[in-house]
Amino acid sequence: MGDNGEDNYYINNFNYNKTHNQLDKHVSLATFAMFTGLLAIPFCLFAYTGIIMGGVAVVLALLSKGTAAKLLPQAKRGILFGIFAIFLGYFVLVKSFHMVLTDPEARKQVNIMSERMNGESFDDMLKDVGFDVSTE
Image (cartoon, rainbow, N blue to C red):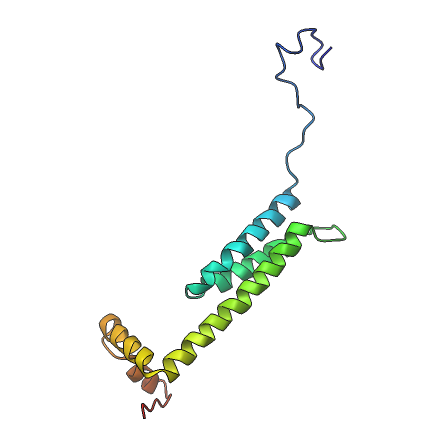
């Protein structure tokens, strides 16, 4: 009755799914790329983390293709989420610098934090590298 040659199939069924193969490595890599891209989107709110994770998601998704003719759907989503995270991360980074350079209240907070952490203000650091910051 069973594959193991015994008539007691229901009693001794440890060989039930013997022919089942493990998940293909390309599918696993594409799925991991998709989840890395998804996690990269909320991590864009932290400095550089979302950009790096988005890049990793894109690379993993492209590597998951292997020698196949097409990308898996998970890999396509991984590329989409990764690219979105990269753009969102750079947007947040540029917006943060713009806010610090144009908003006096934000600059004051950054100067206080910089003095506590580094011993000199953010404005002094910018002057040291040759960037003129006028607070007029």
